[in-house]
Image (cartoon, rainbow, N blue to C red):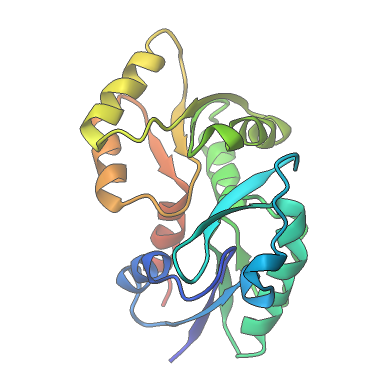
Length: 217
């Protein structure tokens, strides 16, 4: 059975992130490796001043915020780990761009994939849903640096139908080409509800990965 590396910024295993991949394409074996597999929890720095903080989970379910700079070399180790197990390609299960990562096999990064989608579709003015206030400024900077005009909203954590109504209200006087859900791990029903109820295309960073896997043989 061919193999795909599932690269996680927290600790593995993360069945909540890998099960959607298995559902999208069961022809592959998914080999997990987490950036925080290589450190002890007590050694994770609590740096609230970092430029880009990302939220992830430890093996026991504990939520932690970790900087992109701290994670990058550990993710490089995670990639090397799965490539030693003869994967055909790897997917990064994180919304952080991590443009600096290297691989010997194809590495699919959600942010880069969505950037290509936006460029192909000619989208410039984008609404972006940030998972937290902490990430709102880095997310704005990320899309601005890629040449887009982002309007960032912070997810109020409402039920999907109420969230759709809230987003419509926030964007009522704006003319955005699409809404980007800048997070990997949204429940499918949340994504589908927003797709159905919002009057603009919805692009979810997790769904671009599963959509890609559905077309792999």
